[in-house]
Image (cartoon, rainbow, N blue to C red; front, side):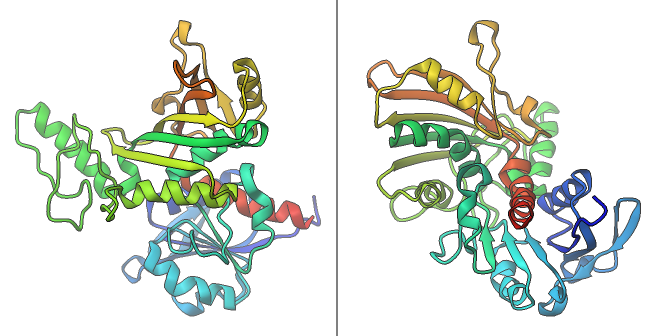
Length: 346
């Protein structure tokens, strides 16, 4: 389309794992970019990143970095978003924020395009990206919520170390080598770097992601509770979560149990999921076909399988949900929101 509009886009946190994926997606999807501005901390300023064969120089993110920017994609930590997102909006940019800074702000829509894109259209300058583990769950549950209603969700997550950043990836790899070599594993990062106690992640499972709240649940678990209610626009949905870090680099897996409001037919459930946008059903247990983190890595979709009735509750349903936490769980959801906003303007 010769007359297609183009946009000035800024990526904040361009050197991080999610920021790098955002840049890759913008290029691969041929996002209609007029000018790309890559923003990072002062220590990264001056370095270059290749985008569509051109070298783009990294700039330090400042309040004045957003002059002329149409879309500002943030993934540099909540404190950076709190500081700089209002300045981006002041300059006229639409901010799509991949941190927890604005997720529960009542004036900021919390958006998964397949679930509640309408909410994004009512934004006041900032749109929040949900937590990675929430995104893949609600994307899979949305068609069931619409058809049957949901009373209760109990979810246990098996989350990749990449969700805790490059330092956690390095720790898993270093510890794995040390253990295999018969050495003692050095623990510096997980479960939470800022806390005094660290546990081995190699060949282990750590039932803590983020710090604990007063109710015994972690902030990660409470994010899933509160964000699910906000995205569905339904405070009556009962959500309980247990979030676990496992020695996988990419791809979050979730065991999800839901109690629907109405009786259901399992074949109808499967058909609803097969027709749901962004969802791929992999559910042939007799052939040992089910979603795996290794298969989901690098893909944009949410994969669902192990569909089965509960043995005791007449409206209980079990499923297994897997997605790439850096893509649909972060970078892709962010870019996808921007794409959908552009479509809505057309």
